[in-house]
Amino acid sequence: MKHIVLSALLVGIGVTPAIATEEINLLTWCDHTDRELLEPFEQANDVRVNVKVYELTGAAISLLEQSRPGDWDVFMVDTADVVRLAQQGILAPLDSDALPMGDLFEGARMDSHHVVDGVRYGVPEKFGFNTIAFDGRVMGQDGSVSMRDLYAPDLAGKVAVYDYYWPVILQIGQMNGIAPSEFSLEHLDVIREDLFALKDQAQIVGDIVATQTSLNTGDAVALIGAAEWVAAVKQDLPHLNWTIQDEGGVRWSQSLALFESSEKKDLGMKLIEYLMSPDGQARVATASCYWGFPANSQAALTEEQKAFMRFAETDAFLANAEPFPAYDAELDTAMIELWTEFLAR
Image (cartoon, rainbow, N blue to C red):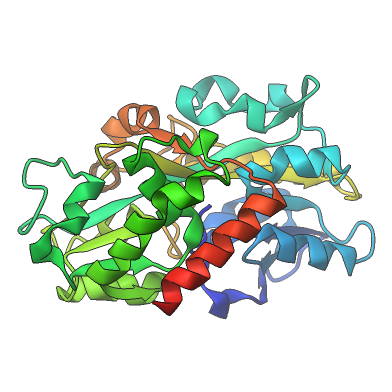
């Protein structure tokens, strides 16, 4: 994922018509809290959508375990977790015929991440890229940027690093010829020196807000690890740019699913259908919390929005970026330990 959810939004938010005959509960990241997103569905179905924002999948599952069966209906979940959760019996089958599968960007479908034994348990809703954002006046004038560019002597103290180990480690792995899908424990020693050298180049290692601010103010001229949206919609700072690095990028993706324990699966499916419609896709793609590429190629975006998003290049971006893989606990723990060592330097 996307791990760009603001912790201040960890609250339950009801987006509601004044009186509704029915309610449905949505567990999601912060991009589904806009009234402009959910109001059309609520009004059309005489329903109140109660929204609860969470950060990581583990937190969502903990919340589910503390809830009564039937408390939750629709789940917006990290795509990498769909198969595992389906195999655990947490997710319910989806009706593929009710979804615009033929309109999805081919590279975003990722059926292997959504289908188990021929049954669909999730549908990709929105995606983006953990990439390099940069000041185009300083680097990447031709639109091409290599990970190695961040190690240039004149960029010492001018690189912002997003404080999340997965994308940064995977991007350094790609710089060393290691595909995300092939990354393993043995590769941590391969990338260790380059990871620590990146710390020497860093102006800041921080969260989305801090690193984006550093890039926006010019204290940093490049940002690694965060998503493309930190630069994609900065109309007031046209010198900011982003690209998938020459070595290839990493793609985050979020999906929609139904909880098996839901007692309102029909209504939940209607909500998913709306969110996957051209109108719903345009609204969730441009959510105030964060922008991202809609999975539906027919999303009703304005021409201006498409230009900001570089929508016409979506297929090319997809072809040059691998999705986040789901790694086992041993590798994840080792990556956290290496990242902790990196932070302490």
